[in-house]
Length: 120
Length: 113
Image 1 (cartoon, helix red, strand yellow):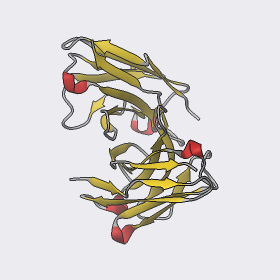
Image 2 (image 1 turned 180 degrees about the vertical axis):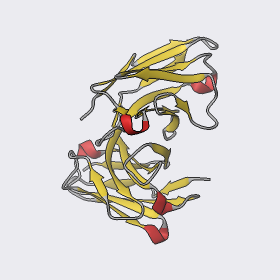
Image 3 (image 1 turned 90 degrees about the vertical axis):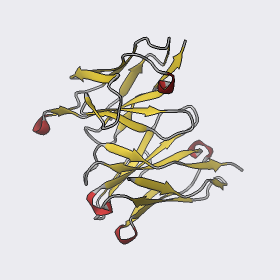
């Protein structure tokens, strides 16, 4: 079955960076894209970007462009995201999610989420 | 960016009764090459990740109970739970995947009365 297993919770100080990983199984990683979505406390789901599982094709939300980087390792069926220059407003649960196909399209499966807390 | 607006913010329904959630997009999400609206509905139970219920505005995912139905066109969409069960208590989100950035509605919290 499709599974996306994310790395564990992180606590970071303002100005630091955080990296979250996402290990996929149960499907052919290169046939799908990986989306990153976050959910701050009490806020709506917020799409951050997408990376193709088999190429370096990416799409970034303009809101995060410049301090958000997505990478993927097709041979390891994994993806990662790094968010830099953290501020308190970045405290959120970060999800990786599978795209239904190779485009930046429908999200059909979600990881369990990774809580990132930014606090001095 | 396409703005997704959901109503109501919360809804209390008796078990066995109907729940209806509305979603409006700020522009059409109709994708003409496939003749489909790029509109999805997700269910997020407390402490869990979202789960895809509906895509293409009205197509139920495999395994989703048929008490969940959805409809709509243009910019107005609806998710209906025909007979609310205790396990349906959750927050429901609509989302457009017509273009980037993908955007979500603010969510509708469904509770039992």
